[in-house]
Image 1 (cartoon, rainbow, N blue to C red):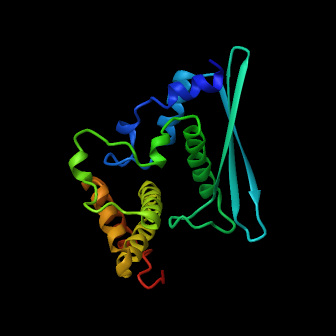
Image 2: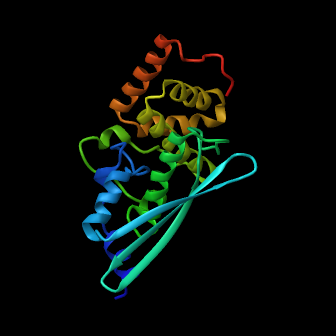
Image 3: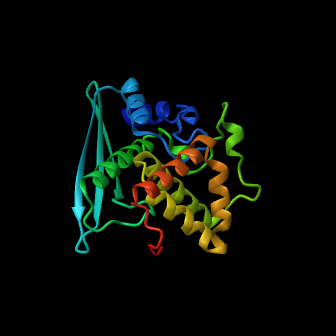
Length: 219
């Protein structure tokens, strides 16, 4: 079996369900777990990033991952635009936004080898003590709504990780302002754990007390 085939055969069988940052549903895999898993199977690896800036100031990140074993070398690449908490491309992104996108792109590149590929199809059912906190929607979202939910999940995770109360406030308000977005909001609420909901409220309140929460900003 060639190296490409061996990598896919092994990494695609890795159970990632217990390593999702949300601990309730499969949508987001931490880069630290993804990369440490790769190293456990194929320690002789290397990755690099290239950045392409467009005329409007937005930027595309590409990750190239190379794995070597004996005389064989396998390579794959994947790309991802630098986006804000709404998953919209950022014009003139700062170093933090670029770094965050690099690590997300690395995880996406690893999915092309099979590691956590089910994240992108939503086919994994999680087990564990927090499962009851993430009860799926009774009426599964379809089409564009499902895509939007995935985007809001990623944005919410990023804002929670960055403890960005303003971003969390805007995400919450944006989904509740339009009646057609309420199914997405309700699905997101079901997927968040109690701890994540508490952290969200705490970060928003901290931003409010610090005077950094802009209540009048238009969505």
